Image (cartoon, rainbow, N blue to C red; front, side):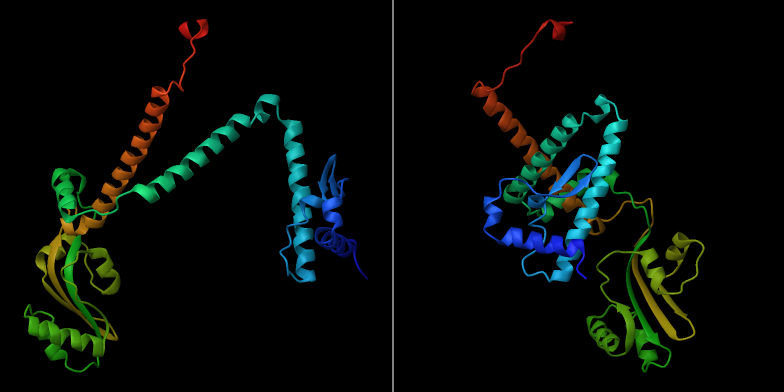
Amino acid sequence: MPTRFTYLLLFILFYSCGPQAEKEKDRVAIARANNEYLYLDEVKDIVPVGTPAKDSLELITKYIDNWIRESLVTQKAESNLGDEQKNVEKQLRDYRNSLITYTYEKELVKQKLDTIVSDTEIEEYYNNNQADFELKDNIIKVVYVKVDKKAPGLEKLKRMYKSDLPSERELLESYCHQFASNFYLDDSSWLLFDDLLKEIPIQTYNKELFLQNNRFVEVSDSLNHYFVNIKGFKIRNSLSPLGFEKENIKNIILNKRKLQLINKMIEDVYNDAANNNKIEIYTNDKLKK
C-alpha cells in the first residue's frame, strides 16, 4: 500500500516537472516543526533527474527528517539564548569576508605566483639560515639489499654491495632486480636512519654510536639475509645537509613569495583607494577621549 511519503514523492515530482510549478502562487507546506514550515518549492530540486523512485523517496524522506531535527534544535537554541548571544550577524559577516578574501588570494596566487625556485636561491637561503636546519633525527646515505637465504650468488653479492666501482654497481642492480625481495641503491640521497631500521632487523641501543662504528652491516633472520653499506651519516643535533633540506627550503621560499604577493596586493588596493579619495576616517569626541 502506498505510504504518505510515496504520495509526497509523486506530488513533488509532478510539481517540479509540470507547468504548474512555474504558475504556483501559494506555497505548499510539506512539513512543520512547531511554527516553522518546510515548503514544496524548497525541496523540489533535491532529487537529481533520472533517480529511481525508491532512491528519490529515500532522499526526500531523509531531507525532511533532517530539516525537522535541525529546525527543532535551532528553535530550542533560540528560546534558551539571550539576544546578545543570538546576535551572530557580525560573526557571519566576518566569516563571509574572510572566505571571500581567502578565495581571492588563492586565485591571485594561482595566477601570479612564480613557482620556479633555482638551486642558487635554495643554496643561498640554506647558507644564510643554517641555524634553522639542525637535525632532529639521524640520517644516512645507504645501499641495502634484502635477499632470501636460498638466493644464489651470495658470495658475489657480499662483494658487490661493498664496492664503489661503476661496473660492480651495474652488476649489483641487475642482481637485485632478479633476486632481491627489497633493495635501495640510491646512495646520493639522504634517508632517516629510523626508516632503515624498520626494514632491517638491526639491534642497537645507541644509534649514534652504531653509525660511528659501523660501515658494512650483515644481519639475518629466519628467512632472509640483509646487507647494508652505510655510505655516509649525519648525527641528530648537527647541521642538516643541503640535499636533505632542499625540498623544505623550496617550500619556505614559495611561502615567502605568497606572503609578499598578498601583502603587495593589500598595499596596492589601499594606496589606490587613498589616491582616489575613496577612504575617509571620521573622528568624533568619543574617539578623542
